[in-house]
Length: 124
Image 1: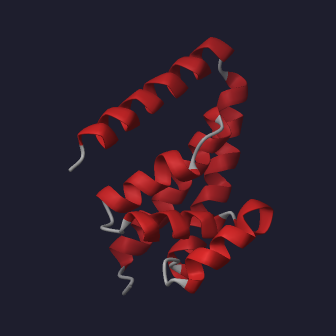
Image 2: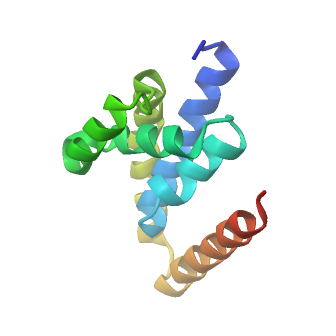
C-alpha cells in the first residue's frame, strides 16, 4: 500500500480515536478499527482484522498475527502507524473516562455499540 500524507495522517488519527475509545470505554481494536479500515480505507475484512491484530501483537495476539501474516493479510506499516495514535489516544481516553461519571461512560459505550451494529447490519 502506497502511503501518501493524507493516508498517514488518517491512520494515525484512527489509531488516536481507537486508543481514546479504548481508554474511555475499554474498546478500540475490533469494534472501531476494523469497520473504519474496511469502510473508509478500503481494506478487506481479513486485511483489516489482521492489521488490527498486528497492533496488539506483543501483548495478546502474536499467534493470531502469525496466521494472518502467512496469508498476506497484515499490513505492517499501517499497524505501526495505528500504534502511534493508539498509544496517545488510550492515554487521553482513560484520563477522560476517569473524569466522567460511570453512568455517562456506560451510555457512551452503549451508543457506540448500537451505531456500529446498525452500520454493520445494513452494510452490503
